[in-house]
Length: 248
Image (tube, rainbow, N blue to C red; front, side, top):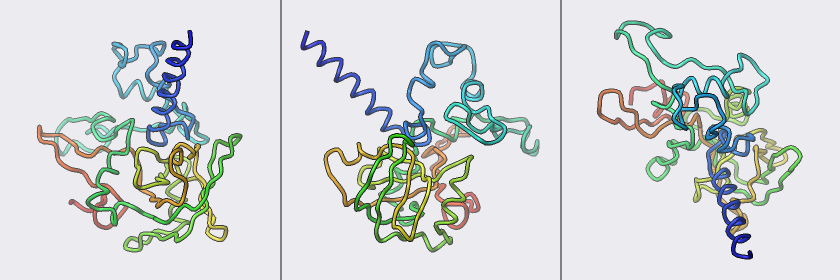
């Protein structure tokens, strides 16, 4: 009996850890868990052998709201890139959400080892944290908050980017990029940054201080394949090098 209880505790811990390790906003910080998508009870789920396409599945079960306020299962309604939504200059074509976006992880974070200076929009040190379970938010006490100067990032710009439809995401410990959280508020005078979710798992084995970093987000893939050849994608910013405004 004791063995069965221990196994159950282990499995529950593993599931909880997996949900926390998913990248925001598709994680517990936004009240999203694996079961929101990997649920056999959802109609025609392609994840369980159903006939619904992945795009239609996302639109039917989550990305369905045409205006704010948004929620975990009422996310912004979006249109995929296609000749119908752009132009027919290159013929008739369409893409799936998952051609460019990874529903689980910010794969762009893997460029950190090569281009941290371009990737992070803001950096600094977390010196302490607290978690408000009622609001499901964590407040990080920070020092040395520095913004990416080359393309003019500020607290106001980060928060504007973190509007109702989208979020910048913060890694409390850039040495462990498996855990990140959507930015909710920045208080420069009070030296605090508020994020959605519980950052406690980040500090389960090592307490602050830790170096944090904020990235552009959008759950973009590391590579995109349109012609049978996977090409690297570096989409770190709104403008400047490694942005959608440049063809590199």
